[in-house]
Every structure is written in C-alpha cells, then in structure tokens.
Amino acid sequence: MDGDPNNNRLPYDNRFETGNIDTSYATGNSFSKLENWGVAGTLDWEIGGGANLKSITAYRDMYWRSGMDLDGSPLTIDEPSFDMPQHQFSEELQVYGVGFSDRLSYAIGAYYFKEEGNLHDWVIFPGGLLMIDGPNDLETEASALYAHFNFKLTERFGITVGGRYTDETKHFEGHQHDTNGLTYKISGCNPPGADASLLGLPPGVATCQEILEFPSAAEPYRYFPPGVRTLDFTNTSPTFGLDFHFTDNVMLYASYSEGYKTGGWTTRLSSPHPTYDDELFFGPEDATAQELGLKMELFDQQLRLNLAAFHTDYEGIQLNSQIGISPTVVNAGDARIYGFEAEATAVFGGGFSFNASVGYADAEYTRLNNVGDNGLPLTLDSCPARTSNPNDACNLPKTPEWKTYLGPQFVANLANGGALQFNVDWTHTDELFNDLGNTEALKRDATDLVNAAITFKAADDQWEFVVGGTNLTDERYAVTGQLQGGTVRLTKSYNRPVEWFATVRMKTK
Image (tube, rainbow, N blue to C red; front, side, top):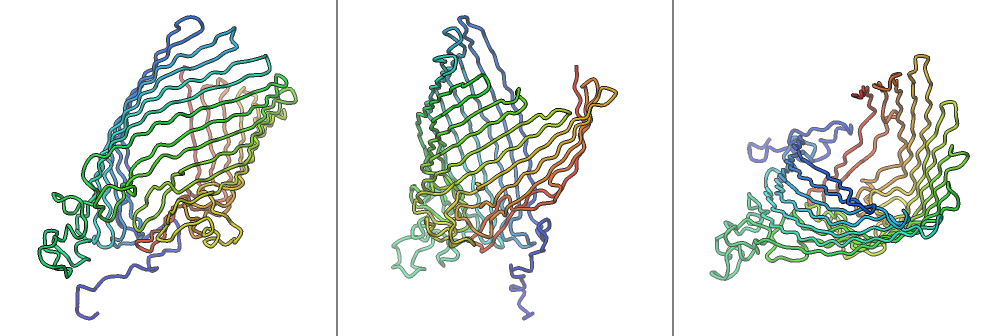
C-alpha cells in the first residue's frame, strides 16, 4: 500500500482461474429469459383435378433478454447484456397435387414474410472505461415464388425439377455509441465540442468531434453513421434430381441444388465510422451442392441401408471474425466440403435392433478474402502454424472429419402385455475447431459420448416411464470459444456433464 486509494485495484490476471471448468469468480450478469407466443392456421381445400390449395398463416411475438459475465472475475472487465423485442408475420399459398395418372407430383407456391425488431446491445469493458450502448432498429420484408415437380418417366425412372426466386429488402439503423466517451478521453481531446488545438492543430480548424471522425453532429458519441440503411437481395436457386429404382427396394439418386444465405449488418462497433462503408455490412453467402446416393431395404426389409456422397462449394462464406474487441460477421472467402455418409438400421428378431451411422467430411477454405482474426491476417498458409499439426489446412469451424454413431436396442415383452425397452448409444466425434482462424486453444478434442435409457411401456400403450442418463462417461469439451484480442482474454463454454433423468409420458384418448 502506498497511501494512494486510487490505485488500490486488483490486476486482471490468472489469479481468477479456478482450475474447474464449471466454476468461476464471476459476479456480474448471468441471466437468459425468453417470452414468446404465436398463432398459426392452416387451411387446405380440394379444388379438383387431383389438386389442393393450402394457406398457411402465422404470427409470432418475442421478447428476449440475456446477460453474461465473460471475464470470469469479480472485476468489471467484459459484461455484455442484450435485449430484443421482435414480431413477425408470414403467409404461404400453395397449390399441390398429382396428375398424368399419378406420374406427376407437384407443388407451386408463393411466400411472404415481414419482421420488425430492435436489438439492444449494452457492453461494458474494463472498469466501465468503454460503455457501448447499441440500440439497433431492424426490418425485413421478403417474398418468394417456388415450384417443385417430380415426374415418373417410367415405373423405374423419375426426374425432379424445381426452383425458388427470392426478393428480400432489409432496413437497418445502428445507434451504437460510447456512453463514457473513451475515444475522446484517451485522445486528450475532450469534450467533443472542444477545439482540436488540444491535439496540436491550429486553433479554429476543427472540433474534437470532427477530428476524431464521429459521424453525427447531433450525437457526438455515436459510432454508426446516422440514417436508415437498406440492403436488397434477389436470388434464383434451381434444383434438379434423378432417381432410378433397380427394384422396389433399391433406389439410386443424384441431385444438384443451389442456395443462398442473405447478408446483413455489423452491429458490434467499438470505434467511430465517419461514413457508411463496406466494413459495416456483409453480403450474401452462396452454395452449390451435389449429392449421389443409394437407398436399400434388404433381407425382407430387415436391413435398411442409406449411402450418400456429397460435395458443396461456398462463395462468400459468412463466418465470425474477431476484430479487436468486436465479434464481426464477414464474408471470409470461399470454401468447399466433400464427404460421404452411411446409415443402417437392422432388425435381428427376438427384440433386438441396431442403428448405426458413419460420416466423413473434408471441409477447407479455398480462398480467404483479405480477412483478419484477432489483429492477424489470416491466409491459407497461416492456419497450420496455429495448430499442433504442420500438415493441417485451414478447416471450416464446427466440422469434424469423422463422426460415428452406434445405437443398439432391445425390447422385452412382459407377461402383462407391457414391454421393457433398453437403449444405449455411443457417438464418436473427431476433433474440430470452434473459430474462423483454427485457434489451437479453442479446439474441441475428439470425444466419445455414451447415453442410455430404460423405458417401461404399459400394456394399453397409454403411458410409459423412462429413466436414463446422458454423457455417462462425463466427457467435457468446448462447445464455443472466443479469443478476445482487445482484452487479451480467452473464454470457452463447455458441454453439460453427466446427467440423469426420469420422464413420464401419457396419451389422452
């Protein structure tokens, strides 16, 4: 102690690491609440000639609030909270049916969607030095036309043709500002209306606000340029498919499809933007997918086997990039993913059955669009340097190379007409990365999860009782993670530990 009460502060360092992934020293925000209600109605008319007209109308109203203490300490380092009221309306009209002696099945429709909402960010950084208040007004209006036709050219061979046209308009105004005016304070030019001569400029040249490039004269702490911004998107996505039935129980198919994900705005600003520029929004993501597969039912339908190989190319893939203290959605570049899946269901008799699946995916970036992550440029060659394997490529996040599932089941019939059902399943997932830049410290290691349950089914099939457990081996792994370059902090959220449950289900007549 030096007698100065102004520096009696704890440093933010590893003293706040508990060594236990389920506990922390956090004392700040910790809540998540959702109020949600909606109504929907479906009307279906037979209009003759094998056709039906369907109307689907829906409305939803939501209010969501959430807050968290991300620094894991009793200090006010990073304590964001959010709230969002939102409502939406949708209407779909569809004509569907069959024709040409049931050789043709089709669906033709129109869709309309509108939503309005306000996303409010409130993020406090070290000691309240930076206090970002970010109300955001959003509105989306979208319409689409689509058609889908499947025609049997022969009893064994069919063709599928379809497409969707989408027209979407988005409106947005960002009101992000720093309540504490940190930019002014650290520059030494404060308050906003003061003369910029405080920075050594000649008197009368500019104010502090002007020289620091805050965009709104009426709101000197505002980051986002004032005014309602608009993004318009149109997209036409076709789909084609072929299917051939070798027998009634063996079918080969191939498909080609295109799709897109709409663009939007960056809402997590931490510095002023004097003009509206392309750093404040991101464009759409486009995908082109091909699939070849085989579906079979063998041995008198006691074995069902589905095989598929797939390939997808992405253009302008949307991913989260950590820019300083701001998690920001960017069009990172292009990527491709290819692989295969196999699924099997077998019934052995005597109450035994078995489900199994295996999947392989090779998912990599093919081009990176001048993107950075935590202040460092990310290139196709930089990812291996961040991992323990020099042969690694830049992998897409959340995409394991191998995933395997095994799920045996046994049903024992009881003398009273009821039954006992025993289930166990095992899932192996290869290692995967949780972020754009393949940060080693955020990697999820390979995992093996085991679940089990016992179900008693009543003889009248009106009720059942289930007891069981999930994650029985108590496998723990990182579900999400963030390397916060602006505060030199790494956080991870983990999956749930072993849990036990009991459930009663009843049917009403």
